[in-house]
Length: 433
Image (cartoon, rainbow, N blue to C red):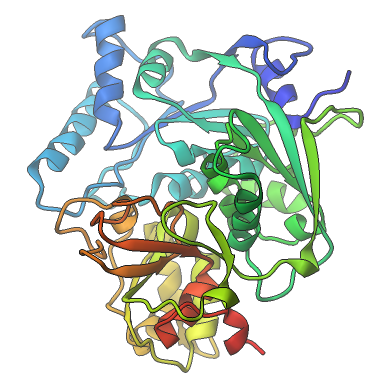
C-alpha cells in the first residue's frame, strides 16, 4: 500500500520501509526549536533527566529564538532570556539568535525559514504549536511540549504516533482578493477546531501552487487551529528554488505515492472562495467579510507569524496606498529581514514603510510576536478592555491579544487593511474593483 508524504517522511526517519497511521515509531529529529516562553522549561527537563553537565545530542540541530515576551520591562520575561543565553553559551550553540544583538531575528517560525532551517523531507519539532508552519516546505513539522523537547535535546529522537492524512484541494486559479488566510479560515470553519485532531492536513491543487512560499506558510501555520498534527504541501520548483537560496545542506524531496491512502479528500473551487472572517472567540466561527459590515472596530493589527511576512505587508500596502485609516492600526513585522523589506520594497516609488506611515498607522513595531500572544502590559498593540480588533493573527480566544473583555476577528491582510480604512469589517473587494 502506498504512503502519503507525512507517512513516507516518518518511515524514512524511523529507518522503516513503511509505516501506517496509528503505528508508534522512534523518529530521528533534524531540527529542534525552542524560544523564550518554553525554552527554560525545556532546558530544565533536559538537565533533570540527562544531568546538569550533559551535552545536547547535536549542537547543529538545536535552534533557540527568543521572540515572544522580549520588548518589555517585565523582569520575569528578562530572566527567561537570561536562561536561554546562559544555556547557549554553556552548550556552544551555533544557532542562538539573541535579542538585543545584531544576530536577533524575530518570530521563530519565520526566522527558521529565513535562516535556512526548513528543508524538504526533514523532521522538525518545536515547543510552539505553530511549528507546523514549516510544513509548507514539504517536511514534517509539529509542536511539542517541554517534556518531549527536553528528551529530544538529550536523545535526538522522539516516540511518535503516525497520523492519518486529510487532503484539501483548491481547484483553479485564486481570485485576486483571496489570500491563503481565507483558504484556511474556510477549511477550519467547515471542519471545526477539532475536525483534524491528530491528523496531517495536506494542501494541493492549482490554487495552492499559485501561492508564493510565504502564503503557503500561512496555510500550514493554522492547521493546529483545526487540531491538526502537521500541515504539509508537496514541494515544487518554487519550493526547491526558495530552499536552495537559504540552505546549502542536502535534503531529500518526498512526494505522495500514487496509491497513497487518505483519511479524506475535500475539494474546493478556488473561484468560489470569498474573503473570510473568524468571529470571536474561535477560529472556526466563520463568516464572510461582506456579512459583517455592521461590526464596528476600534483596532486593526497586521503582524505575527501568520500575517507579518512580506507577502502580507505587500497585500495590505497595495490596498492602503492613497488611503487613510480611521481606527488605531498596528503594524508589526515578523522579523528584522521583513522590517528591512518594508523599507526597501516599493509600490509606485513609495516604500511599504512610508505607505503604512502615510496611511496614519500607529507606527511600526519592533519585529517579534508582540500582541499576538497578549504579552505583558507594556506590549505594543496589546488590546485593552472591550476593544474590538480585526487581526491577521491566528487565534481569537478570550484574552489572546490582551484583555479578556476584548474581541478579536481574524482575517486576511487585505480584509484587515480595508477594515482599517472604514473602521468596520469590510470586504476588500470594495477597494479592489
